Image (cartoon, rainbow, N blue to C red; front, side, top):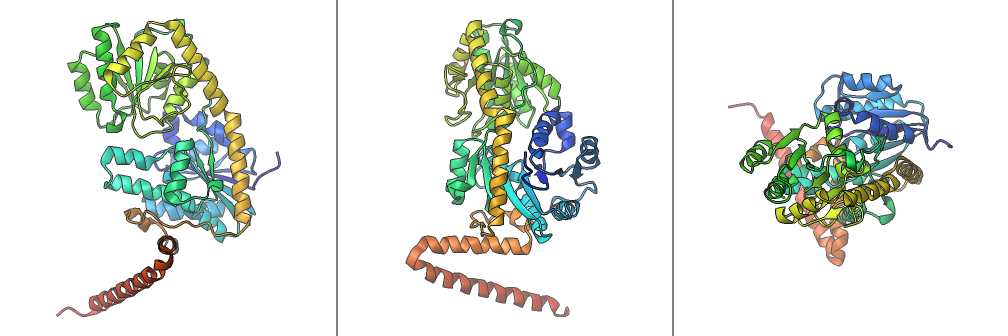
Length: 461
């Protein structure tokens, strides 16, 4: 393969350190994807918020990791990491920066700015399989700081990226509409599932073990899973058992509910990766009840293990699941879910068919080759766009977030200017009046700021 660029820079979000991925037994899977992507580039560089352990894990694999080895605050590490990447890639003519989640937006922009300042032609690819802002909105409310922060980060990720990669159609359409993105800049590439394990045969699985996907938060609606299994125990399957994958703030309440409903329930933590894989691989049926999540990776990974799936979530969730073909889609009501689970539990051939067809579809659409080929095309397109020297900064639609302070002054000013430009252009002939009023307001603000500075310089009486 002809090299796309001199270097590929992969940026992880703040929650996904290499050490954390290793503890969860997920590092090997994601590293397989990164190594495959790096085959199209001269070298691979990884950027994380982790510490010395991240540096060691990357070094063992022959890769440099720019990490937070000094334990800096997030905003301090943003500048430090950007400078570190520019130093590591000194002498490179081209590079592609790929973020692994939309929450990496500020760090991705800072790294690209540092490389551009160093004379490197850099293509920026922002990758996000789902929308964290919608999930935080459901969890904490539309006016919550968490929801505003997630929206800001998504906007920061899309604003300066040459190519935006979404996991599925609903996410892509939302981004195009919300941030006024040109359609040609947005690509749909499903999340990668590396299926190394041979599935457990249906006849070798117990017929009474059900797995529900967490973590145990409000939007996971795991109380519905417990109520569904409780109904099954009262009717068709008195020995039904439930495993909930992922503890969270709702765990104490869910434990109490399970005890009240007499449902044997086991809670697995996220970092116990091997136990989670075992639970999914040997489950009778997997149950997903999450809200506001359109591209749930755990569901696809379970399907790759040929575990039949019952999906009780939003209509646009996991569109890869076709009712009756690759899984079962039900309304999020205990009675409906209990009927679906009972029907599958008592029909092994049906479970086998759904598991097999689901696995075939996931391997076809989420396989390593298809995903890496699509990402390589996105890398080329981003680098081509970077070479055209065209302004791609979008208007700032989410400027109320405290996180705007994380941007350098020049980038923050550019975001505000873009927002004002977008506002004025939408108003047509009335835009000029609005622009003059905004200019007057900014001049008054500058005068007030100067007056405050003068007051602070006066000696105390």
